[in-house]
Amino acid sequence: EADIYQTPRYLVIGTGKKITLECSQTMGHDKMYWYQQDPGMELHLIHYSYGVNSTEKGDLSSESTVSRIRTEHFPLTLESARPSHTSQYLCASRGIGGSGYTFGSGTRLTVV
Amino acid sequence: GENVEQHPSTLSVQEGDSAVIKCTYSDSASNYFPWYKQELGKRPQLIIDIRSNVGEKKDQRIAVTLNKTAKHFSLHITETQPEDSAVYFCAALGNTGKLIFGQGTTLQVKP
Image 1 (cartoon, rainbow over the protein chains, first blue to last red):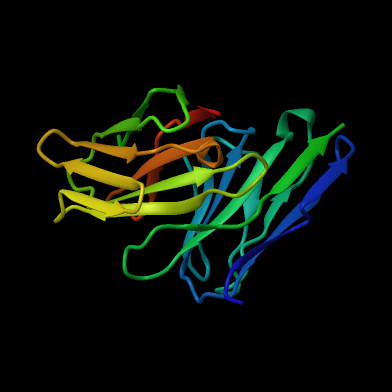
Image 2 (image 1 turned 180 degrees about the vertical axis):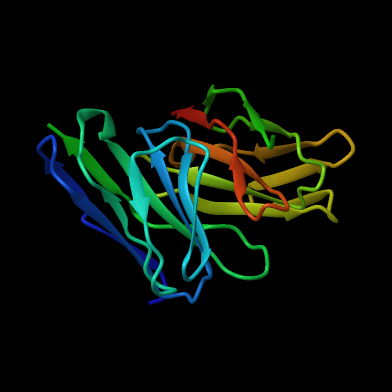
């Protein structure tokens, strides 16, 4: 089924660890986005990409990095996790034509 | 810069009543306005959208209206049910290609 998939769904890690959150979509969408969201709160854009080898920082300052080597894959990496990174991370994608985003189910990250 | 203001932040209604959520956007080039519903622990889901060449759109109990002159758009839910309880986000698509989201409205429908 064409959708956008995020793994892991939940993650608890120690301070200082390096982690990568995975996001893949099977819809052929060119545009992909990462949002940080505390439960029920605002969606903060942290990174986006309009195609392979294109990445931009979003509106919220983040210590994470992203890469876009393949159209379908848009991983987010935290080099050194801190408790302040505890949040939910949502990946989204959008195709050509101006339709809305499709969101993934999110990764709930807890840094202890 | 681009901005979307959403009100109210919380809304509590009795089952069967109507609910209205309002948004104002700043970028006059915005031409697409989706609404998302996010249930507790779930991903945001698109529930209805409207393009700038249309003033109103309905889908069963939900409707969206757009006033381009005033740069306002609103979500209307009629005959609310407990399963409508969720956080609702409005958004506007500008010429940057990014959706600008409102701050969210927590809707509680009391049985």
